[in-house]
Image 1: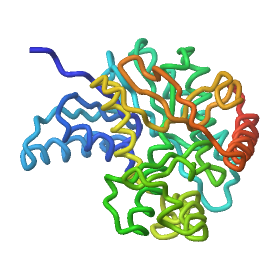
Image 2: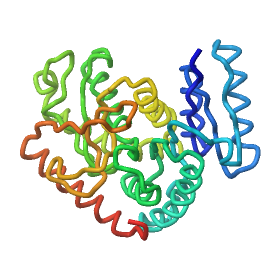
Image 3: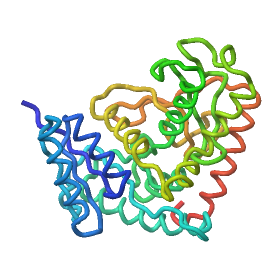
Length: 310
């Protein structure tokens, strides 16, 4: 009998707890939920364990304020960080969360030197740079979750627009995790049929715009950031790594010349397996998409320039 893998989720807020819950339901790994707030990770872990009695999975979720419980984790998901509050500039958010992600990375790497880091904290692209530089890990073992979420939003809107099953919608969203993200319309299909054969350019533009502002739409509705889809998206990445599924998923990966971009974390399709990012795939882009990706890269570089650890 092989022993279960161990996954640590840092940050027991809504996104972290959802990620832990989805992983627990999958029932192949032990999950450690870590947070600085006393009682919060312990309580959420206890609740998820008790849900196991209802849904029929084995309770192996531990809540802790201490990183010793995370020792020997195969994968660590970092969701810790503050959300942007009214009146806070993007630069303020960068420097605040840089300190948090730096601290968390140092602590998890001390306990799990061979782990793979999945960053979810915002601003995502910049926080990947922090985790990579602080950990000293190779680029294959430090990457971020954003593109799966952005793509899921686009897929949802396309399924509604066409009245088709979401299972048959294939889409990919590239670039930075923000308003400059690039929905690759030329590669978007429903059951293999190009989206442009099914939906007017005007409607496609509306769906693309709604996707780019998808996070903002949810903040406006709820007064806080989304958590169900982001938490599930991070868990999907963990699945592909620990089960060595080799899923091709859009993730925020470190580019070394791919797409003509050098030394920057950007959202691109990657093959995820037991070693982390095993391959970066290059999608054919039309001229408009390539120009948009260049703009997105410039916006990400601007945020990264504020970092002290980069």
